[in-house]
Image (cartoon, rainbow, N blue to C red; front, side, top):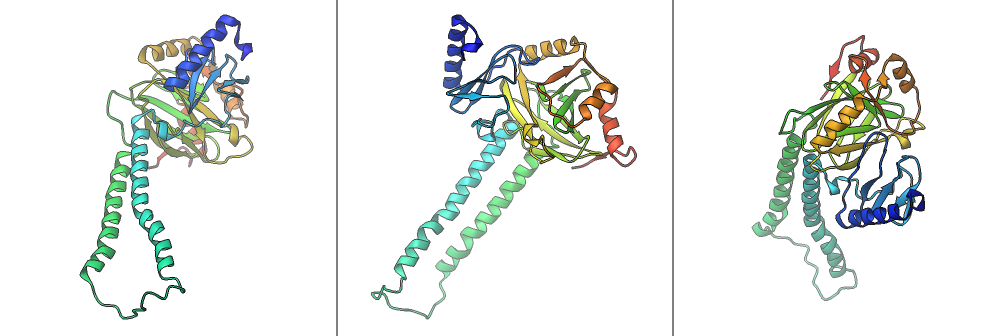
Length: 335
């Protein structure tokens, strides 16, 4: 931690860490290659990330390298958007139903086993049964009600959390995501910029992500913002997300695709509107075009050391990737 700077810097770091641990905040500063330190919530730990994203940095009481899997609050339980919050609500409801169903079973099975044990001679053996409406109602009505209730609940959430369903609010930010080995390329067609292994979005505004793969099938998942959706070569899928608060959230490929699979992660950086506009301005001024030669290098199987921002993109690159992998240019939009 001493490598972060002098005594004054250490005081600032201590204040940031204390604030992060108390409030669980995630407040990144500049987003072009981690040019400035930031705080990222990690459950009860707080990670202080240095300017170089690959350097070991302070994380509570343990050392951390960017990309380590010691985060404890990157799931939908710590939801940072409406979709993940809805998924958390569904999880809680299903957990309560499971306790209601499994609880009596876990309690009654040992009780019955003890009561009807072989050594219990105080109770008479009664092999002759008689019909009882109350018993029949107890046997059939609760299970039927549970099955019907769960069916209605799951149907409702299936429609509500459909990844193709647009989120309410302002017009969405359009993003095209291309899965490569072992990296993610995010293209902003409306803004004319692109980034690798970092998705920057504005807070409070829906984002529509269209996905495809330039290689084998992969799977994009951002647990704190939305669920999982596949990306397949020659076709497109969709995912709608929105961040309800600023922060840096982890995304990853969850479909095994070779040696670099464990390193194919990326950050989703949610910025306030003003900071997002400044990021776009900085991205356009980067003087780093995503041209054909650069795309060939990106397409090679490799793990990049740190996120990269491109100031311009080859026109219709997303469609070309689909056409090259698809059936002679026939684009398929699969639900």
